[in-house]
Image 1 (cartoon, rainbow, N blue to C red):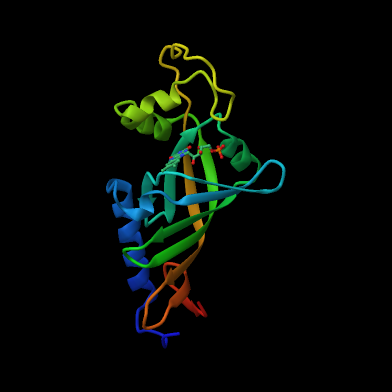
Image 2 (cartoon, rainbow, N blue to C red):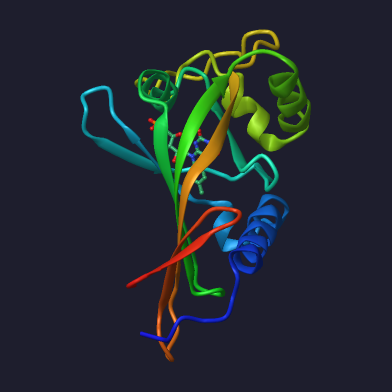
Length: 184
Ligand SMILES: Cc1cc2nc3c(=O)[nH]c(=O)nc-3n(C[C@H](O)[C@H](O)[C@H](O)COP(=O)(O)O)c2cc1C
């Protein structure tokens, strides 16, 4: 284990948010596809990959899109606490964040998201008359323009950063103003 470095909380916080913001625009960024862990309706763990769509450092908020009929939405409506895990080999950084989520199915946030998604190949995912996870049906025509896009905002409550390095791993629990160094 390396001795405590001189890096400040603000320093590391800034570097983390720079990478998160890059990941929302860079298709090749390894942090673009974190794993989202939730509590299933049966009380057991559930996890799946999602695409990071937004990262707002000031609001400590991450955003992703999903289908409002997907099981994860039902889960988050019952148990809004979730975790996101990011790993980047390039950075040798793992980020584990505990978040409080909100699911938005209507309103300005969803309208803005749909205007983005509707221009992309992913639009058809949200226009299918069949909910995600339902048995496979023969193809059916999309219902005229009705989409099922939901925007999930995830406010960061706790952030655990781990850096792997040959000269010694570093791990810290961070808030925007504080840093607590932990045994990796
Ligand atoms: C690379 C990758 C990116 C994905 N991105 C999303 C996403 O942004 N939103 C989403 O709802 N599902 C996404 N999925 C699909 C989910 O991992 C999952 O299979 C699906 O949403 C059903 O999850 P649920 O049954 O827990 O609701 C992605 C899968 C992969 C492999």
